[in-house]
Length: 451
Image: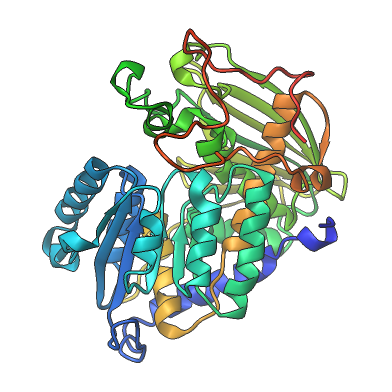
């Protein structure tokens, strides 16, 4: 696979997103024209992975306009499936009747995704830990299903290539694919990107992107209460690379994606540094607690990337771009988007709604509104390539920080190092195992092989 073969299609994506948003604005004028799996206008949804994000995504899908039902749920663990269903039903309130999952359509185990996809659904929501995403996406595409999948879409280069290969089939069959990079459906970002395309800050010469925070959930299952190493890692999935890809992939991907979106391209190489300085206890598995990466694009410009999970430090979730004519700031506070130093200073303001218009403030909801409108109205809508390139950008950064060497895009995406277990079973062992004291091997820059 050459660099040319992996060039992104973000400009086409922006066009697709705009079309989908327009379709949502049309309201329900076309909602009864589609025929789905049951021979009617009902979109039947299956959920694979019913944890917190899975339950939230299901609620958002079921809150869209039109006739829609949740008919199947799958998870590795029965307690997760039961808890997820209760959470979804409660959150939907007056729309709780959209949950129509009979006991026979609750599937448990590593093969639950296959059973959900084969259960007569139209759309599958894939929200298990990211390591499972490539094989689940491929199976759903081959089954002809529309898909919403959370980011990142893989944790290693073989997984990214699997997504890209399967998506060629998805595009040929006109399947609608949404990816949980919701900034592409967020009004301040869309408005700012439109101005950048018009030349508001000139040519972008450098960018800074940040996801610095105190961290995420503490490990949920103790070793003494786990039945196997596989269960222990699955329950504490964020702290293992085969499941999460490290927080540079699982979380910081949002900011890296915005950098690529601004440039309309992916980086050609990266170097960086990182490690474990605060979150050092063995219960935190194998991931780092901080990464700094310098990405270089083919035009010679750079993106400087920070992500940190260290309490009590400076926090920021933001993106900045310096251009030859001005500066762009994208933030989760204030107006959300500002341009300064150019001929015309600008900050995002919510548009005034016309009569009968609906507020579209929540990008997590809007991304599902747009996907569902595309399904019902037969619009082109496929975010999988963009999700794959942004995921690979994050993996490239992890390779640079873990290995301590400059890594090219071509070498990274063609790597054959797979992080996934050879066998998916609670009796099988993941590739990374603890020593006798329960501690895991940690990447050592300068020594760890990443390609």
